[in-house]
Image (tube, rainbow, N blue to C red; front, top):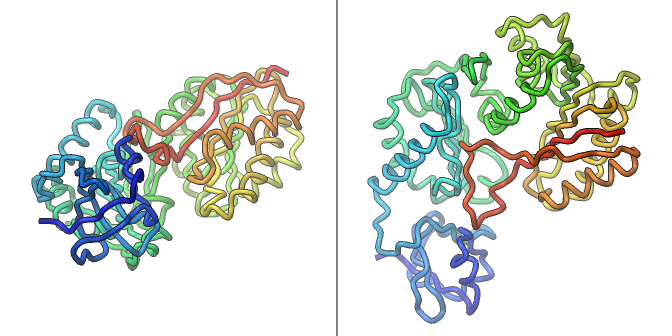
Amino acid sequence: MYPEITLKKGRENALLRGHPWVFSGAIAAVTGRPEPGDIVFARSVSGHPLALGFYNPLTDIAFRSLTSRCEENISQYFWQSRLNAAHKLRQKVVDEQTNAYRLINAEGDGFPGLIVDVYDSTVVMSIATAGMEKQKSHILNALISQFKPARIYEQSEGRSREMEGLEKRNGIIFGDDQCDPVEITENGLKFEVDFVAGQKTGFFLDQRVNREKLGALSRDAQVLNCFCYSGAFSVYCAEGGARRVVSLDISKPACALARKNLHLNWFSADNHPVVEADVFAYLRATQENYSMIILDPPAFAKDRKDVTKAAHGYKEINLQAMKRLASGGILATFSCSNFIDEDLFYRIVLSAARDAGADLQVMARLEAGPDHPVLLGHPEGRYLKGLLLVKRK
């Protein structure tokens, strides 16, 4: 039998609506002595069974639901079954010209706090919760038996892990000790991925579908790709027939990586220059107009207290980009900040358009690709949001 938590009256409603989290203030009582990361049984104050999930009294999110089938046994078979389901979904949404994708997207796949990305024969996993940390051996066994990867690299760090009472961990945990960058294929295009020192787990897999969309719209375009990192958007636009793509990033290693990825796909840096520059300063100073501008900045708000400052940052880059966007031009603008929700992001972009005197049409609302599924009842999982806009004047 698992330890139990009892929720306060009325506080079970979120779970019943499909939201996977219970905050510490919603818990009325704890039966037994569960440690951080232990599995507990949650019930309502009237005794109604609600869910099995991870418990951690050290964090605001004290309970993370695993299943509403309270009779289930959370065993190796449970995780293998979840992994099989995740893999079947990826087989449907990832084509044969792509060997890099997200295999497990945390709560979206029923693994709270776990990210697993596949880069050909390299698997990178990131654990952010004490619950998943305690299930690590089961997860590893399931991954090894199902995929037989050459290596599994763990990249578990960050603020959320610290809040869960966990130390950071980085290194090979299975297979050979090869840690050099690997080459992947995405929609037939080649990219180098540094899964040890790169951002996130080495590549922004969530933007694959959006890269396809912009590549298809880029014929004959003059493109400005801001915060380019690996230059992936730039490669897609060059492949799509853009006359010229200018890639900007303040990071010297990112610029070197962007040049390498352009070269891997037989595009010349002379025709498609990569510029080491601060995006804000560049947009304010340039007098050049572009027919496509891509804004995919890092998360400006990494904490709720950062929201106001981040909102100013998002407005400024969108305002300046709109001023440099030619009539009829396309603006693709994104936010990956969890604390900037969709409504706020859209209001920021609208405010920037008003100040810029730009009349914009919405072509599409953008989000992460289908290998990043989100629970219907868990809107917080939709961290990436974007707009594809056309400037009418």
